[in-house]
Image (cartoon, rainbow, N blue to C red; front, side, top):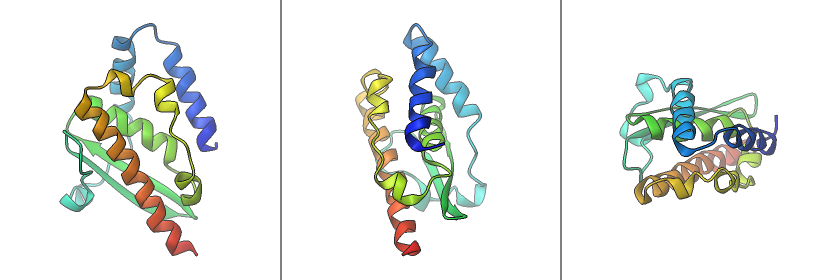
Length: 140
């Protein structure tokens, strides 16, 4: 699936819920299914700066596609990173770099987060795209 197709799928899923309490519960459930980062990668260098909670992300290339794993010490934050990893994992770095993230606004996520969590969300997206840039330069 392309990044856009995954984003549209996420938009559809979030539209099925009637209120934000249900959406938060869904995000928590997504966080429980997150491909967890191995303990050896839970280092300070893999922590996303700018997040209120601790969020660790690891990226590696497999067959010219980036594969992300992550973890967080907060359940909502874990759900947020799970949504982003679902969107960007197993994608070519150039596709990640050039992707839009307006699906976040379409599901209403940013406006339902505290300002510090919203800043953390932006930091997570930036970090995933930075990994993509770093790996894309290695492919050239």
